[in-house]
Length: 618
Image (tube, rainbow, N blue to C red; front, top):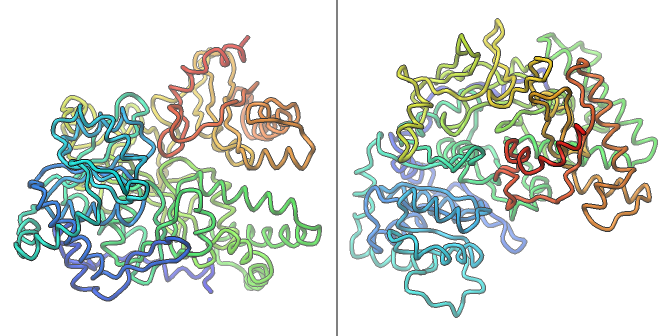
């Protein structure tokens, strides 16, 4: 059992652990070196199935040769339209091994978006997960003259389907075995032809301000970044990780698949996005990376369970978390934890806090990683009080993921840490915009030289669009997005993200958009946490018939008003929320208001709900 005052097990790893100057070479070196060891695990029909490196190598070889049998050429693009699963990784590595370009498409994208992404990337082969995703591809294939083949992972429901363009993954692997027998060196020759500066993957931005842009990443940049990650977020081949975020997003692609490929850490795939809480408890990851929404959901679950507990359990939790917070205070100040407090914390963990950690599934975690969006500093402190360091990283698609990271030896809630040692980070002296430069930055946007020139300046600095400050220790803190800063009618500059993070700390609020630019005061649009608010309504006999009626119930309105009142006390008068409106439509990832990572699109929300906003200023 490790404690917060003993963090020697989380030391940066700066020595290279795997050879290879491109992802394909690195993967095949890993197969040869780690052969019988388990790399991937996935739960199917209630049973966890393990994949050894040799098994993964066999599957990638068969898929790669299958692609060659279909006429897939060097530097052609293959796209993958699927939820996160092992087949996604196998296909990705096969495309890279065939000297191709791999592109991911969000499984929540509509057919129209699939058409745009395949057309823009010049996709010739499209992998799809199942019949639902196949329908999207079939709906737009006539508008994609370059698309030659569609490969389906799961043929359930397609037994009698017959189409010359469509082939199952199993059938592709069978073709690959035949091709390998006839041309045993063909795939190896493709791997040998891959150069470090070749385009490896496309990662399309979420498109919050227009059409998605295809960020191009080279093999060199991806390999360089994977090695660099180990200096800020060390992993070992004994680590158990969870893979559940979209693999077409840079966070899971780089921090999950490629980083684990490099380190040998085991990747465990959840059954589906809805089973994440259950699967976390089964896997008990030793290193756990997630977005703030996941960490907020876990915290909310604990708070709701606590309300249902008896008085003795509530008192025990209050004592234990109080002890944890006192320990966390010492750790955050860089002070030694007194011996007496250490003993209390051991007791607090044994009696209460370890059970809370098991309830979440983080009882084996050496540390937690959060990124992709701002997180409440109070939430970081809470996890630290449980005895698990939470490290915030910051980066973007264009910087190949993390560019800064909070070191475990110097945690500062609210900070994104100093620059990672593999790149430079500084503030623009005029605008305070955060700029990044290094071998990890992207090659530019596909087919968009003007947008590329706007983002990467003549000196090689990427303009991130985030505004920040830096302290005397070199720790950066993001104050907001440049385009999101609110200037009220009275001329006051306000950063809405700080207010929104405080609101989202409530178990009853999933997301919030603060309004107030050129307005006399601030208002907010709120998306409630359906599960927790429904439970509140049931526990308090609040009548409701559907989601919309739930948001309009006076008791629910009072509940959210209470959260806003508590939040307002933490801010100056000009920064306080005067009134609010609850989104009365239950949104999913398919809705245009949400990004694929389930964040509200500020600009679109303001446009779509303009009448409701005007009513708040009526």
